[in-house]
Image 1 (cartoon, helix red, strand yellow):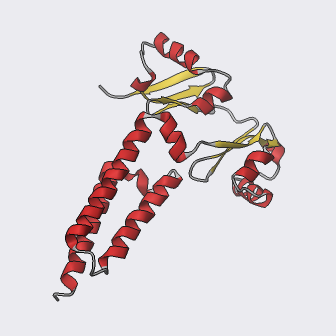
Image 2 (cartoon, rainbow, N blue to C red; image 1 turned 120 degrees about the vertical axis):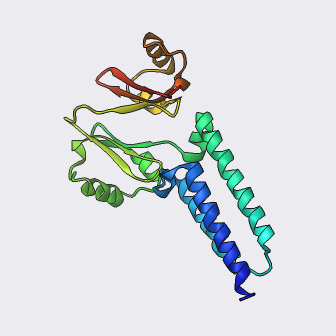
Image 3 (cartoon, rainbow, N blue to C red; image 1 turned 45 degrees about the horizontal axis):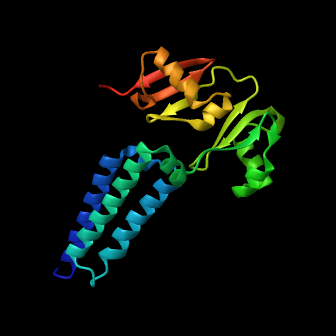
Length: 211
């Protein structure tokens, strides 16, 4: 029993740390939206699994490791939410693989997407001809977002978490100055006031942070 006591304590602490991170970071980590989310989950699992059966690492040292890792995760989360350049550097950016029925071969090769894999992703979404695709975007989590010719009521996330989505602005041939002007017309002073902004048929639908 004496042998198993440290193991049980470490396991309990690991579970508590996992619960704490889920509550602090949000339940989105259960369905990762970026490569960093995946790595974060793997590293925490590796820390817990690797240390539990290691007698050379004491419970106190284990607690210290968990605290350091949790602090690192919180710092990264805070940085991503308050600086779009850091967010883009960490998470990457959506990549347009197909535009107006034409494949961007350079971007496909750069991101390790073979022609066979691209066609598989299209078939998985019920599309069998590339010329049916108006836009195919490879998201940060590896999923493919597709827009077909003739699709209506497409909503573009032009503002996300208080930050302008530069890729969407480029897609609709506008810039950040135009967006700020649109917000001022609707009574907003700063982009950071908006939790989510959608662009639909030339109109902005805004969801502000609650005061």
